[in-house]
Length: 155
Image (cartoon, rainbow, N blue to C red; front, top):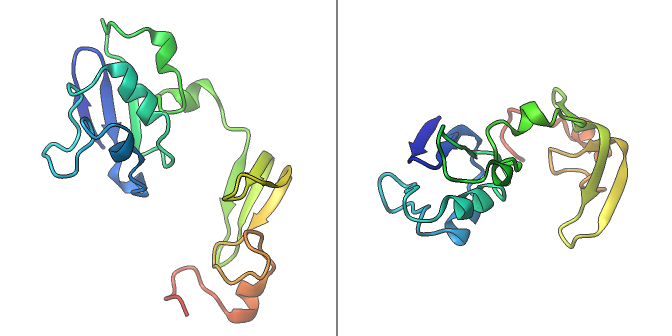
């Protein structure tokens, strides 16, 4: 984890979680710039803009908190990007990675397709993680028939 701070905000970056979709780069390029070192400049925009951008990070690799004495309204800093979000909002959904099999989802969840269409609502789902299913994103057991192993090379 790397930390970037000023008097009003602390930004945390967990590189091992980053899926590199580039949302931060597109939304706030003055703060997030891969061609600069350090690549995060917390002084390049207002903390509220940084918070709004980090709240849109899909992987959770970017997080934030407010240091003691910050001039930022703490009510603005309680979003999904807050370093304390999980503590304040315990998980209702559990996703289990099975050995050489699907992702098992338990708990109230809504699965939304790329076009925004709701594919399934419910408390249990088995989602394909091998890419071989004929019913993606749902698992149809094709991984077993094809002999897919999680740590093997793709066919």
